[in-house]
Image (cartoon, rainbow over all chains, first blue to last red; front, side, top):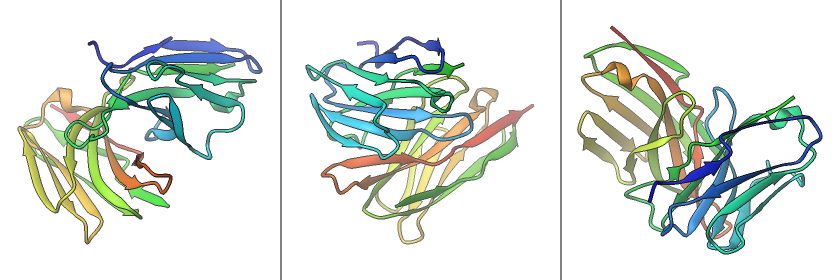
Length: 115
Length: 113
């Protein structure tokens, strides 16, 4: 297992376009998280899945954002009608239920630039 | 709500010791994590404290005082490669039936020769 994979690494899009990012977690991890990070800030929680169920969403997640994890394996994060304020690094992380010893494992992120 | 404070930037000399402090105000506290993040890369797990006291892991140690809402990360024998952002993160019971992790803004450490 090579860790958490995210695709693409970079995405440049025009304002108003839709974008979709993919995350492949560590295979035995049943928990998957999406975070957003802007320059000089820590990661901000967006949403969380346990298996295929989306259990929590941040108030930061407007109705233009939607996330899925259809078979409890990979996940997608879609942003519709992108805005310049959506420019950020989108990080995916996965963990086991008992995350004490290992914390979350993060992917390398998808850097989104909205022009 | 969750509130985490840590210094924005610190500078230290190669070979020295540096202490990065973190204070927090959290309801439903259930543990504190430290992550390292090099520029443009993903955060990587460094340490975890849930009970008061010091946890040592090689050159890195982390301390927690739950009554004071305070933690620090201690880096010894600093190396140039330790130049990175250090993120303090608090785990709390979110009330939606799960534990969540919220991050501070990070402390950018610059190690100079």
